[in-house]
Image 1 (cartoon, rainbow, N blue to C red):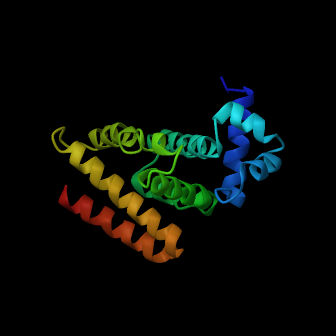
Image 2 (cartoon, rainbow, N blue to C red; image 1 turned 30 degrees about the vertical axis):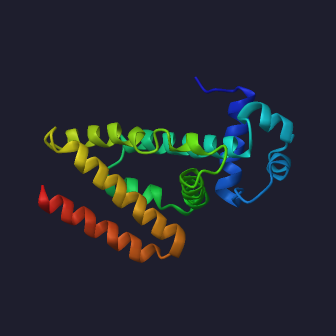
Length: 177
């Protein structure tokens, strides 16, 4: 069943807005106006601008984890590097930096930012026959390479170079197995 609560509707609208126009640099009032609501409603549902942005990033990540189970690594990479996700990925790295830097209201962003991915990646590795003892290290390596290359893409915009690097990583990984 689809969650049609006011919070869920606002979150979906914020995800769409940020994906197409950005938003991390906007004030809470400006974001609220763009979403067709009031800043008070956003505060009620998310606590703060940082709470809203954290909710957006977490939901996008949850949707990506759900897609991981249905896609092979190359298709998943194409999905992650789709231009429609660029603003959300930029938001992810902005929040990551703010949380690491101690920006008030962002510390909770770090909760699960690694661990929430390890289980689904390890499950995918199990399906591919990776021995159980090797899965944790393989999962962290894959997550680190993926996030590093996404940061490269968000920073440089050099899709060809980033895709070539991921293709090389996958080739090296497959050849080592």
